[in-house]
Length: 306
Length: 312
Image 1 (tube, each protein chain N blue to C red):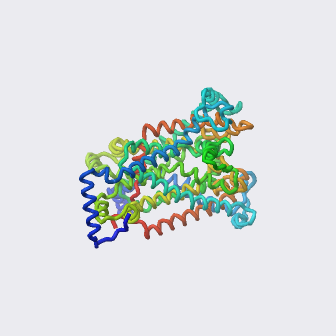
Image 2: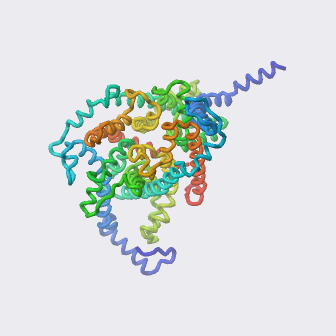
Image 3: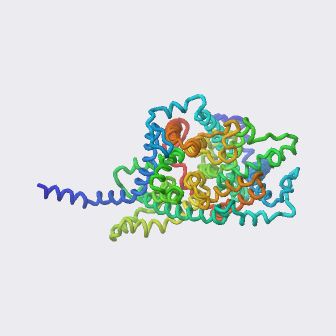
C-alpha cells in the first residue's frame, strides 16, 4: 500500500503542472518572504504592540485599550493631526489633479517645443521633499522671500506664510502644486490615447469645446483620474518631510500632520505602543478610504471594454 | 459657444458647419482653431513655465549671493559679482569633527542607492517573471495582494520594522535600508510584469522544448529583452533612494553615516542664523544628480509612468 501511495506522490511531483507551479512559487518566494517579514508581520505586530506600554528600555506592559482611548482625550494631538491631514488631502489632491490635467491639456495641443515644456513641468517632481522644503522655506520668507517681494510689486503686503496659524497649511498645499509631474504624465498619456473619430463626430454635431470636454474627454480619461486620486490620497496622507522641516508641526499645531505626530510619538517619546495604535487606526482609515474610492468608481469611471 | 442640440440640426447650424468647412479649406486647420487660441496657449505655457522654474532660479540665484546681496531689498535678481566660493565652502565644510562632508554623505547615499538598485531590480524581476509568464494556483489572489501592499504607507509599519532591526542589532547600519529591497517592491513588480506580458510567449515555449529551464528563460531571454523597463525602474529607484529621508532618519544614529538628505537638514541647523546662500548651494549640489539623470533619461521616466498605465 505504502509503495502505491509513494508512487502517487512521486507522480504528483513529476507531473509537469505541479513542477511548473512549484517553480513559480520559487520565483515569487522573495516577495512572499519579504511580505511576511516587512509588511504582514509588522502590521500584525503593531496590532499586538498597540495593547502594550513599551519604551524599548523596560519590559512591555499590557494596558488593554488604554493606548486607543488615550488618543481621543482632549489634550491628545491625534485627532487634531488627523483633521490637519484630511484638510490637506481634501484640498491638495483635487487641486493637484486640476493643475495636472490643465497642464496635460495644454501640452496635448498642437504646440511647438512640447517636450521642452513637459520637461519643465516635470522637473520639480524629481526634487526630494527635503530639498524642496528648504527651497520653499526661503521662497516663503516674509522679509527677503521672493514670493512676498513679488507681491509687493503689485502692491500687496505679503503674509508671513509659514509662521501664520491660518496660512501655514495653505503654504504647504500651494507648495504641493509644484510637483504634479507624475499625474500630469498619466493624464497626457490618457489624452493621447483618445479615439480621434469620436472628436470628429462631436465636431460634426457642433458640440462646443466645453461640452466636448465634460461629456467626452472626462469620461474617457476617468480611469486615469481614479488612478491619480487613489495614489495622490495615499501619498498625501503620508506627508512628512515638509512639516517636519518647514514648520515642525506649528504654528499652534496647524501643520501637525499625522505622519509627523506618529514619528514624534514613536521616536521622540519612544512610545512604541502609542505609536502602533496610531499606525493601526491610520491603516484602517486608509484601507476604508481606498476601498470606498474604488467602490464609488463604478459610478463614474468608464471602462471602454464594458 | 452655442449649446449643442443633437439630432435636430437647424438650418442655421447646418449653415454654420458648411461655413466652418469652407473656412478650413481656405485657411487650413491651424487657422480655424483660431490664432487667438494659439496665442493664449503659448502665453499660458510660458507663464506656467516661469512659475515652475522660479523656485529653481531663486535657489541658484541665492546660492551665488554674498550675505549683503542676500538681505538686499528689493531682492537682487542677478547677483554680481557672483559668490562662487559659496560652493567651495559647502564642498569643504564639515559640520563638526564627527560629521561627514557633503562628499562623504554623497558616498554614503551612493552606497545605499546602488545596493538598493541592484537588489530591487533583481528580486522584482524574478517575481514579475512568474506573474507574467507562469500559471500556478493562487496567482490572481497573490497578485492582488501585491497591488494591495501599494496602499500600505510606510508610517504604518515603521515602528514594528524599527523594533525588528533593533532585535537583530542592525540599527545604525545600512542593512535595514538595503536588505528589504532584496524581496521585491510592489511598484516595480507591477511595472515589470506589465512589460514582460508584451513579450511573445512563443519564446518561452521554444526554450522549454529545447530543454531550457525557467531560470534560463528568465535570465537569457526575458531580461535581455527587457532593458527598457529595467532602465525605467532603475531611474525611478535611483531618485527614490537618493531622496529618501524618513527611513535613514529613523535608522542611522552615527553622524558619519548620514545620507545627503540628512546632511542638508543638519546643514541648515548648524548656524545660529540660517546662512541661506550656503543652504541653497548645498541644495543645488544635492538635487543636481537627479536633475541631470532626469534630463538625459526623460523618456525612461515617461515610459515608466506610461507602462503603469491606467488599465486595471
